[in-house]
Length: 189
Picture 1 (tube, helix red, strand yellow):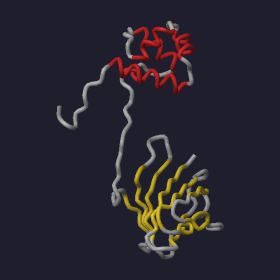
Picture 2 (cartoon, rainbow, N blue to C red):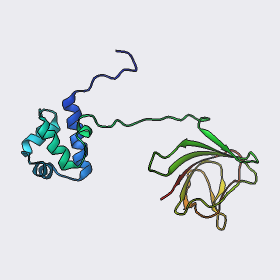
Picture 3 (cartoon, helix red, strand yellow):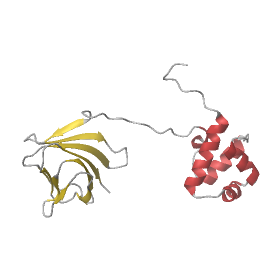
Picture 4 (cartoon, rainbow, N blue to C red):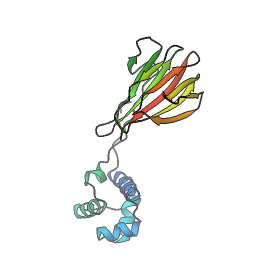
C-alpha cells in the first residue's frame, strides 16, 4: 500500500461507529433508539459493537428513527483537516503597512465566520467601519500589546488575553508594541 492510500474500512466497524455517534448526538439511549426503530435492543447493541449484520430494512429503520440518510450510517463524512502555515493565507494589508490580516479560514457555505491571523506593527493602526448588524469579533492575543475594540471604548490587551466585542460598530486594532500577533474570528448571526 502506498503512503497516501487509506486501508479499506471494515463496513461493520464503520456502521458501529457511525450508529453510536449519531445515537449519542441525537441524545437517545440504546433502548429509546431500538424502540423508535422497532428493533430489539439486543440487535441494536450487536450493531453498535460491530458484531451485527443488518439488512437493508434495519438500516432504513435506524436512519429514519435518527432522522438522517442511510448514507450517514454506512459512509459517514470524514473530518477534513486543513493546515495553514505561518506566512500563508490571503493577505489583507492596511495602507500604512502596519496592519496585515491573513485569512486562515473562510466560513463554509451557510456559516458566516472567518478566521484571521493578525500581524501588526506600531503605527496608526486600523479603524474598521461597522460590519453587518449582528457581527461580533473575537480576538486572542498571541504576542505584544494592542488597543482593541470599539473606538468609543477600546481595551488594552496583552499576550493570552481574549476579547469579544460588537463588530457592527466602528472598531479598531492598534499595536502598542512591535511584533503584535493575534488571532481574530469574525462571525455574523
